[in-house]
Length: 336
Image 1 (cartoon, one colour):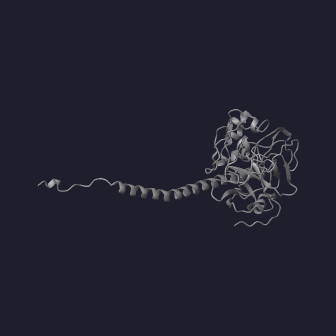
Image 2 (image 1 turned 60 degrees about the vertical axis):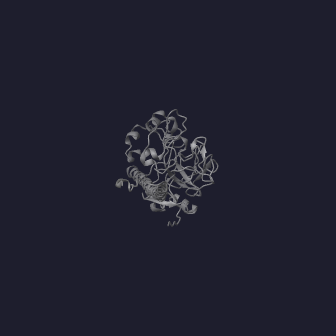
Image 3 (image 1 turned 135 degrees about the vertical axis):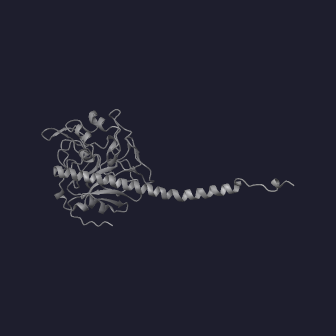
């Protein structure tokens, strides 16, 4: 009798056992993935909040230096303070030294043909990503796909200056791109002082998050002929304003009232049902009333004039949001 043949050693799994193991692994992955995604989004939201905290500190540092906040946007100026040429620079250019980008700022020309028409300026920022200006959760392209200045491509910034509220009586101008207010802090030719924020710095918005697409009623991104629609427009985060010699509602020598890289609050956070519509202030080149938005769940980060960063929910009603956008109307605001 062959004792070695009396039994066989079992090796491997049966097909059924293997399928059961695979099914269990798939279930575990299905359970873990949402948790991992939530952790990643929480980290991204915190990183975005930290970016905005840096912007708040930079704006306060600018105020400490010049005794006022920078302009929201402005045309280039000549030696006497008059308009030298159209489409100057935004507040994001003026605070570059305070976010460790003094090398760019030191070479930037504010004297003539800034904005989208100065090749020397644009070469300084073309295809460069500045971390404090970009939310990691943003679904927007890294760079604008549109340019009428050759190969220069400016990054999509995720943050916008708060110019004021749409019902800020006496400080409103309307034109070819919606309503622009001078009732906030960062608007054309602003230079607002801390002491003029009588509503209180903890009750007044300074910078808002705008890191998502403008979206239609089906929550689909609206892509215009110039690409994604944000307040920076197709010309980038450096773009200023045209022809303003005074603050709103005066147009100065120009008739084009677009105020790039700022927004006048007219809609709720992450509001859907929008359209590429200049009369509504939400057109692609560029509207003055494009809403605050984010890739985060349920709301967007906002910088207040005291430098603090708070997450405001989508459910924040428009009356409250507009009241937070103005600096001196005396509204009583209660946030959750």
